[in-house]
Image (cartoon, rainbow, N blue to C red; front, side, top):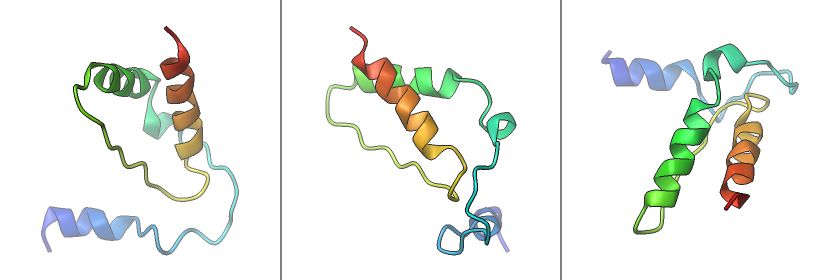
Length: 75
């Protein structure tokens, strides 16, 4: 099996974990550098930008999007 197939099969978003609770993935997400990088790319884009946030429930998608939203509101 190739590496992409292995990575795809590690986390199946169609089959979430049995417990729907917040899981602290801060160590996996790292600091807020990714949010700042996305903010800069969106601000500098000359055309519409499409992003895909995926992951299991409770993995922090909404948290990161809210951080990005707050940055986008700043002048």
